[in-house]
Structure formats: structure tokens, C-alpha cells
Image: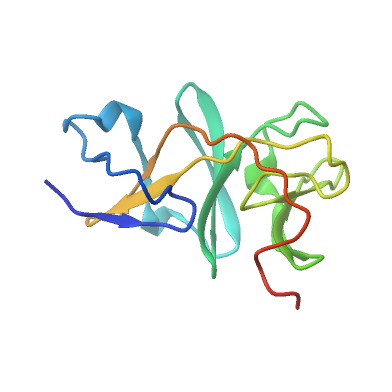
Length: 146
């Protein structure tokens, strides 16, 4: 069985194998290879019956719902990744709201957020998506302000 390499957004207590055909693999489907990802860019994948946007940054891998809650369009993977107010964010290409990559929280409207998804990468470089995480609401940011 492959050893898993944890990413920043994967829950620390999760030890479910993501190897296709292994027990628990359905809970962590493989969606793309690490080589498919572009630094500071997103890629849209389908897992758990929904579209998920995966982002590769200097801080690690992050995954959010791909559906923009303001426009209803599946476009967050095409957003611009950057830092705003000391938070690592993706700007929606439609109406430009910023969503934190670590929590899914919208910076412009605290009542809106998108789901975060845990990720893991196996030894072969395959990225696997786990069950969704509940949205978190935080006032501060984990990242140092620029």
C-alpha cells in the first residue's frame, strides 16, 4: 500500500488510504496528477458528485467548491490566486469576490462561504480528494501579511 504525503488542507487525523482499489478509496478518489497543477493557478475536477477547484500555491495545495455562490457559475478554478488582507485567496472571475483558500470564507460578505475539501498526494503524485470539511469562520488569517 502506498504511503500518503499530506498536504496543508488534509485533516491531520485522516489515515484513509487513497490508493485506487484499496479499502476506503471511494472516500478519497484520485482526481489528477500533481504535474497537472500550475503554481498559483487552479484546475477543476469532479469528485463526490460535485466540481472542485484545486489550487497549488507556495503554501501548499488547497481545494474549494468550484461553484461561485454569487453567480451560480462553476468558475472558481479560473480565478486569480493572491493575497488580500493577509489571507491567501482566489478572486472569482465573475464578480470578483475573494474566497480564502484555507477556509472558503468570502472576504467581502462574511455570511457567504464555499466548502473546503481535504487533499492528499500519494507517492506516485496522484491528488486525492476526501469528504468535504465544514466551513470555518475566522476573523484573522493564518498567513503573514505582505
